[in-house]
Length: 167
Image 1: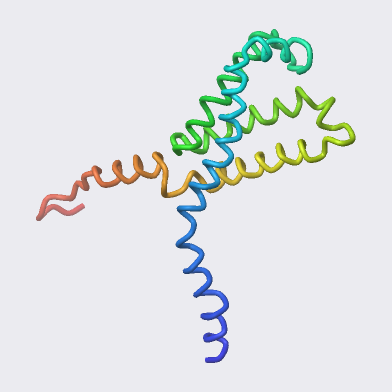
Image 2: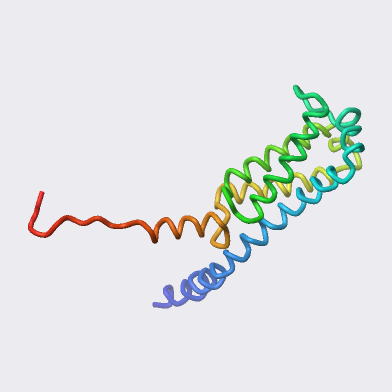
């Protein structure tokens, strides 16, 4: 009896309480990480000449020309961050944004991995962890994905066997 009471107070009540916070926390997590990449993408668009210069001279993107790397990276930041923010194709969008994040670290590793830039690298690691949470747990209940799934489930017609027939 005392064991059940202790479990109720230490496990059940906190679980129920914090579970109510999950939808809002999922939204905050998605919006925060998306905002970081959206700002970066808009900065690249606003200063396109500087962006092209940096991709040609500073960033080390393999296999792509600097112009193609700039276009692809900027488009990825803008598109995937918008999709992550609203939770549309949430898991796949988070995978896409993770690829943009990983490529940014790779392309700028000669700076990010040098002494004095630990905080900048840590930001990329934090964003990567946030994106992994979205990939594994999904975009949450406050998302377009959830809305579309609910509508599809509600519109599904259950076909039943006609009366009198048995298999």
